[in-house]
Length: 193
Image (cartoon, one colour):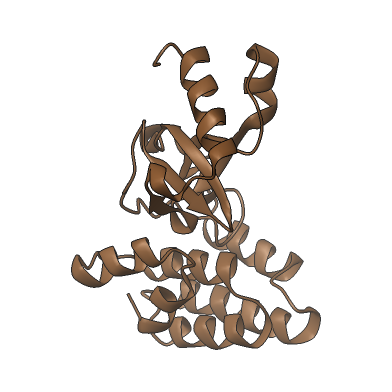
């Protein structure tokens, strides 16, 4: 994995894990992370670097097309999509470029508490990678702890999907009193408390 890709992952926990336990990602998997977590000039520079490492002329064409479109419109678009579909005419997911399943490590599991962009969550399940269709499916299924849980309807409205690249581990001590109360009521509704 090139250094710039690792730096653009928002989760410090994921970055540290990958620094200590390097994994091998294809050029298109790295491009997926760059496309998802960077914009404009930074994204174009990372995709251009990856084009130089492309494993085939087809990948290089796709990445160069995306870089051109970023320069013209600020993001990969119709031309990149057309190149992707013509070069990789598969029936299954992903259906668009830069949504490759990356099989990133799952650092948290059911029962863990996580934080993402200033909000706190209770993790119910980790990603089910064998059912993933694209990068956006590599998520923790969890409940935000900002409200009260009084019944099943509250569960539906409070659930969220936090991508593995956006989660930080926290402890109960990191929760406010209202979040601790929310967690108690959530666990009771889930039959775990």
